[in-house]
Length: 302
Image (tube, rainbow, N blue to C red; front, side):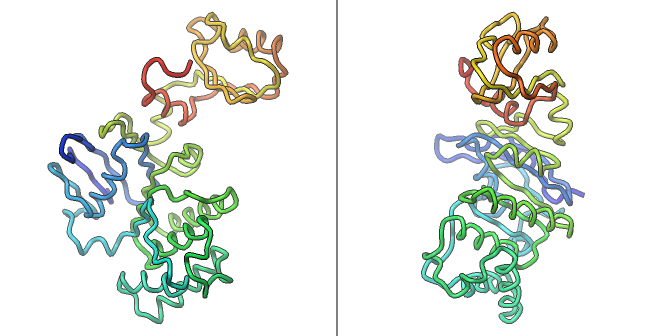
């Protein structure tokens, strides 16, 4: 069963065609990554799913039904921009959002306290939201999103403002919610989180679906022909086009695309003459590399 089906959807803002003939499906129980560069149309798509915007044409179905306002109570939506009332106290704000979703006051308070404890915010219960750090506010907004037990979570940049400890905490909570039966759609620029969490993805570029499907199938399309290497030193061999057709270098870690007739053994033999190799692996391209390859303008990085 598809929780969400988007079929040939278009949305324009005057001369800007933000979403163009977009189609993809999200299956029940999936964690689904909605990806793309800035301005690709991701947030516009999410806002149409949430009925904040209406499509100009095309069809959106959710829970097997055409969009209607009553369905939004079955969804938890975390927008990229914070929508918290800064002068409210944390507990009051969270419970208020629960009541907006139909929770009785007593249950909303009970669940608010449970979630605040779960995300290490108990000591901030009676503080105003404006006193919290950006990361703490993000955790509060996440709680407001999940408090009423939605069947579908739509998370726009859920890890924004979080340090690595809290990113890991939120990741664990998302996995728990999935195990409890929730379907999760999230948009992020953190490709490593997508690789770890997602069952399937859709990559949007200039409003169009340029790549979609299960994560394993998507990566399989690009073949197991990349080299991932960690090293110390000056990797001058990367400039040798007889060995390397392209690369993405981070200083001590590099992802290499071998030249057409170069073998990994030849690249390793040359690499150890230039640098101290601490890790060398033949692998599928990372999702980060696939993302860059598909959306980067021609004539960009080597």
